[in-house]
Length: 281
Image (cartoon, rainbow, N blue to C red; front, side, top):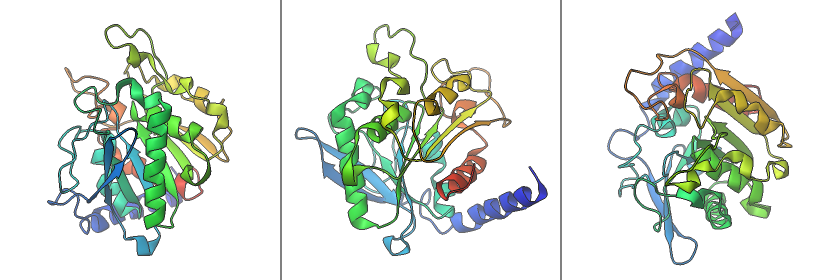
């Protein structure tokens, strides 16, 4: 990194530290809980936080991995998946000037498995479209889909299916699921982002992996295959290196590992902010 880039990075990280204290996340209140009617007679909730709508901020629609069931409480705080990289990055996104919508699983997909194979369904994409429409009614800023790990399947499903006002303005995939393998007792685990019609995606696309990610479902070497098929207005693949690495005995597909950019949350948030604002990561 050159001196200018290093200076910008130090400045932004300083801003993250300073401005982050102004946000309530992690200090008792995490966000406004919004509940929407979704497929069938289900409901789906999200936690909205960050700058006010008057500032017209870009909103990051955050789709966590695993089963996607955060079990949001009345304060908008997740009771589950607290170690997910996107949950840990909330203060950094806010400090960078973004609003966030942390998406919970719908009411008919609770528990550890949560969304399961529903992530690639038309109904799930339509549900996310309702969230996008609700945010647009509240805030005139742009909306970006940001998914991590299995959340990238949800993000790519919505990005490739939705049309009209429900279309997001951009797409960020971190540690995307690109390798299926065998499903065993859970046949849905073979789903990958490549199962979606990627060619229909024309919004800007940023794909981020970690060089030390050894999760069998998210090999960083396959990430280039995503933008080989998308037709994004801007596209970039980034491979992050460094960080503390994985501790012995830690599941390499969990958030507090290179798979979840442990120890590098601020760096990744700054890179995402640059791309969303029209520059390169």
